[in-house]
Image 1 (tube, chains in turn green, brown):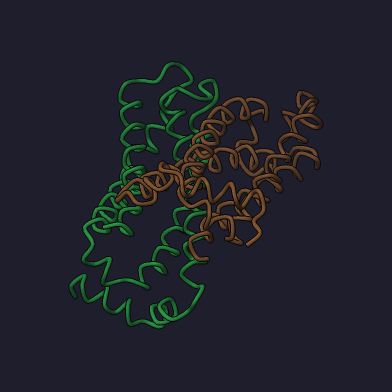
Image 2 (tube, chains in turn yellow, cyan; image 1 turned 60 degrees about the vertical axis):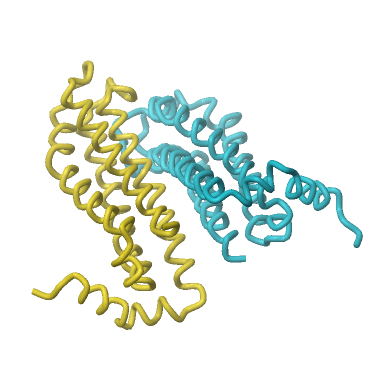
Length: 159
Length: 165
């Protein structure tokens, strides 16, 4: 298997990379799409986790909230990953060497794995009474993971 | 050169010690900017849940007023933090922002987006108990929801565009 560095170089030299590097507005527009998807992803994650914490809509079924907001989360996540690949292709090698970018990818992989395993299961099991301790811990971990991705993402442009 | 009152005010803010301190600090601007983006995420991410509920796209089984009561405190928190952090960013960049077309568009969009809930809450939402259980809200409410989604998206797009002008 080829090294990650090879993949980053291939992306930088791909037609997509060339387009993003030379177009005047492409980066800005893709970045706006990335931000719009961030807002809807952030909102759905926050609301889902507040329900798990028992802070909001405690009387309503967590399974229904998880099903509906989970859809928004997934659609936003796909848009963020696709637009993210576009942004990455513009400065692939800079990202490859950026510690912030590496942190962001590690946190993203963890957050997605966490969501599809523990988080979804907790939402399906959550009753309409007071939130259990494991359920609260899962919600807090989820919030911290997604917040961490955002902070690491912002840091790519700064360090 | 003849300056308008607003432009003069922007220049005074820009030249003030506090505005200059934010602008010239190594980290202040980017830290405030990160808080600003997070608060917009909170604001737009939560209000869009209510909008999508009224459009009948999600959480149809839950009455609109229950969603509104759960969502709006978060939205208002996001709004307050967004306004305060936004004002600090403006303080540091006021003289440049005044001339920035994206900034002007953003302010107009913010005024419009503020008008929308004002009209919504004083008209159709007053009788919400009559339609809160409907899976799809009446067309007035759906129109307000579409406007809200469009205008807030516009605010985010124009806000990001400020850096490009």
